[in-house]
Amino acid sequence: MSLLIEGANIAGVEESDALLDAIALHKPDVVILTEAYHYSQHVPGYQRVQYSKKHGAEARDVLVLVKDGLKIKRRALIKMTQAWYGPFTLRKRAPRRYIVVVVVKDGVKYPIMAVHFPPGGPQGGVKTRGRNKSAWRASAKRVRRWLRLRALAVAAGDFNADKQDVKKYVAPAGAIVDMASNVDGAVAKAGELNVTVLPHPRKMHGWFLARVFPA
Image 1: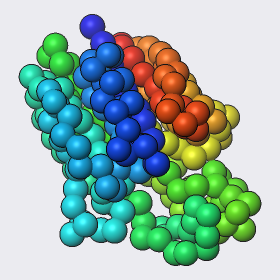
Image 2 (image 1 turned 135 degrees about the horizontal axis):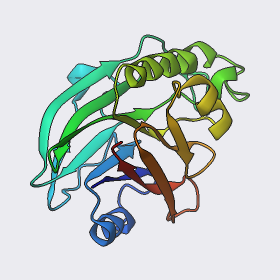
Image 3 (image 1 turned 45 degrees about the horizontal axis):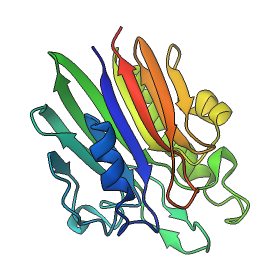
Image 4 (image 1 turned 90 degrees about the vertical axis):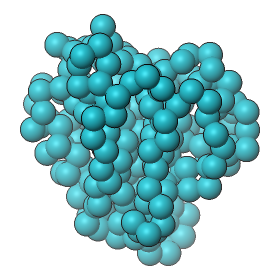
């Protein structure tokens, strides 16, 4: 008994067939996409969870797909509190939004938060002159609290930080961290978490499969 999550940052490859090919090959239960602002492609066999611009400028950044036949018990959009900058300029951006879904498989409820942290990690980033420090740490604090309050839960996507910083700032006591790259991966309060790296069309982000086993 387990849940299979596929994660992919799709910046610059929105029109590529690589994502659809990967989904068709691995048949994940849940797909988490980041940089999905303009991704309108229909994915056969999956329910789409994405919020519109009326929920904020960053609401369409994260997209969640849930396999047909699995029940979505709950869905919500969680608003962060801090504006952020960049990633390549000092343009101020609206606070990030993260999607929460509770997916039921084999009678087990899996709370999942799909995340895309501001760039720069806990020190705020060199290119943005450290300006994302408060935004990144606010995201880390919010996600950590959400995980801590649950016996079984997964946060997955793009953390814009390496494994050690994700462990230190995001993962509560007892959580497992596994990364597919220096920024992409998952944190789980679960019995077991295994992350497998998938090829990225442009060899950029770490596309991944995360298999979550309840305790």
